Length: 306
Ligand SMILES: NC(=O)c1ccc[n+]([C@@H]2O[C@H](COP(=O)([O-])OP(=O)(O)OC[C@H]3O[C@@H](n4cnc5c(N)ncnc54)[C@H](O)[C@@H]3O)[C@@H](O)[C@H]2O)c1
Image (cartoon, rainbow, N blue to C red; front, side, top):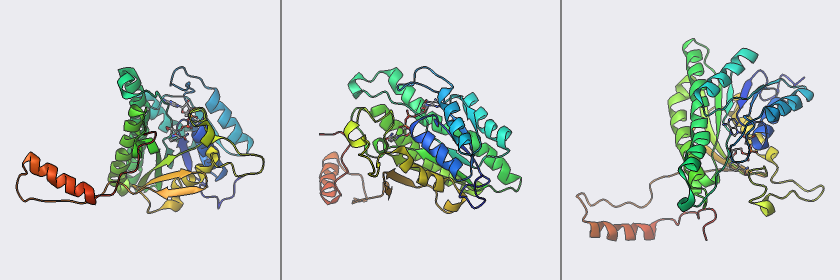
């Protein structure tokens, strides 16, 4: 039994891609704070191929073994049917929906010159559409709740990436999708605040099957007794708090989070500017830009750029 004062007591959370890695850690952490959890996972391979019910079932088992409540959902969140049935699973199983954590995804890394259309479409689909569809179905439910006078303290936590914020060599499809998720987060936060819905995004880093081979050294587990900085469980406390009623007033924000660190990411804002008050010639525009760039901050480097 969780304490009635737990951060998510009485709440119902849906986590996509919760059968493994970060999603699994979020689902367990939400349950440990009293949330009833719908554990979604399609059980796909590293590149998105195949499917299976095992990973979601396993996490449901773990939550129940720890005294929590959970059900599995094995739909594809990048389809309307999968997203609609995901929201329905929360309502049918637990009678409400309070928190949506969009997390599912996979990679198809290639340099742009080798990136074929299938790899582009698959990655855009699972991340960007896979965020939009559950968000849209949950939002429709929350708007109806608000209109019926039951203003929800609804929370959405989206999953972007450093690749989306700064760019990442070899990940053109993924970086574009994850940048798109930031844009979606900002619009959703602005549109849905009036219905009691807050929408934020995280850019995590952790040791999962997605990263353990590519970044083996950075992600390695430490020796006995030391802080396991890259454990996915280190990302989940922020997700739980953002997903709880306690985060009232926080919306439309992006947080980098890994190990013991949380960083507020400050987005695009106007830098040095010049106004001629009339149309520039191309040569004048170039001269003005050269001056503006000299006064501007140097951009953060793209991940993997030499
Ligand atoms: N691990 C990191 O360092 C890192 C860094 C930045 C962003 N992310 C993001 O965090 C999220 C989780 O990644 P992870 O590292 O835990 O990877 P992971 O591969 O361990 O877990 C992702 C899960 O999503 C599931 N999934 C994939 N497509 C699905 C679909 N269509 N419907 C339902 N489930 C689906 C997979 O079966 C898998 O279990 C992803 O969005 C990833 O891009 C991870």
